[in-house]
Length: 605
Image (cartoon, rainbow, N blue to C red; front, side, top):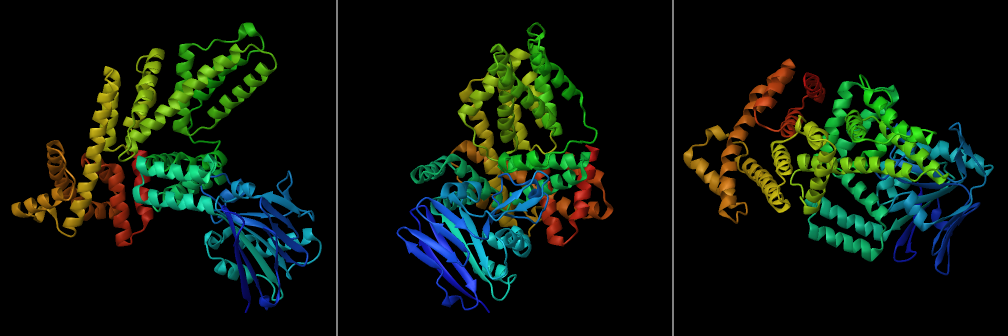
């Protein structure tokens, strides 16, 4: 049985530390020494010093922390689904051939800012060991990797606040004469920001402006950098129970495709569906970008390459060595490039971006070498058009798939400006690039479709921004009211069926539901009355599907019958899939059957 000694203190108002020493008869050892404002943690051959600005170390050991989701990870770690922690051994380096090389030069100094920027933004651990490893420091480090490396990369206890169970888990792998020294550094300011953001995000999902201003004021008062705020927010949003399964499934698909070196049509459809779901659930794209960047696939089944050839052709005209042959990018060329950009996004083809980046690099080098500045200006015009396209696509996807999206006048101003610019290039180009694909998306809900059609008609007619804002806000308010009424109806009805309710019971139910929501105007009350009647029909349709159709569909694998119901029931596909997931979980059926039906539906479409 081993004992543990704990030491807790604070470096300053930002950083605090927890030291744990574990070993048999640990109480007999003196392991720390205070020196002014600093702290020295020591054992034979090992030492860690904490001072006002950073950490100095020598001896064996290293550092570890939990990976923050949404930040870049080594490819080797991404490909292992059970790896969840970052591990750095002092003096260890990777050779060019990927082999890990150990050195006896393990000493060094790390500023606190670097610890929390390169590692976890809130909690990072350092350790060293005596008694289990011997010899030169390089040999000791290699021995520690063999003893503790696998568990340190995989244990979920690294993310826990209490180190007792983590130390128990690690000490059990060491010899009986060993002593294990663990130092955990906590960034108190980052932790306060994380706790406030977690509370607001888990409570609201779409944080109100007033509450977000409170969060921003806290970050300003604590002097937290923008990059750290972003890392913390992404990690918190990933940890939400509705977000994490989507991101994890996306990662698993990409890992399988990367290992196989190809992706099928079905897998591409699944990835697209997950991205659409992510947009609707306000899962930030930053959670997916590192996965896309590191696990990109070069071989897409049945991928069309004509747009890549067209992109190479147009951009190569900018790079002619002879200035007389240098091509001017025409409107037609820019339209072709924008269509190629759109096609590359649909196909998830990163070769397009590689071509653009390579062209930008060559242009920059030539301008710095004395070439005409007009070369950079022509490329800037292309990149500006791509930037307009990407920003508009993001806003339109948010408008289409994000429930109760916050509609701002600045966003509508940007869309109107981009609409005019694209229309000057080619009439109808804005709708071709940005609206047609979304309107054909099978997962576009009824309210998302209404918002897009409203936007399309307003842009065509040159409607005043204030009028468009009012119309879109009315649709969004109705969408929010629809969700509230549906939730109340399901709570009140519980096991009752709508078809079993008589006139008086329906009237009583109507009064109860309408009394529970805030209806300030006659228009809102009329809207609620209409939605109440629609929802009664919807709930009866749901009951019929869950009790009559879905069991038969699952039993007989009737993908076409399921698709026919989705097309004709008036229910949103997202909503029906949530009902199906709940039904499968409630009845204990295998999820593989449902996934197979959905893949078949994608092929039918």
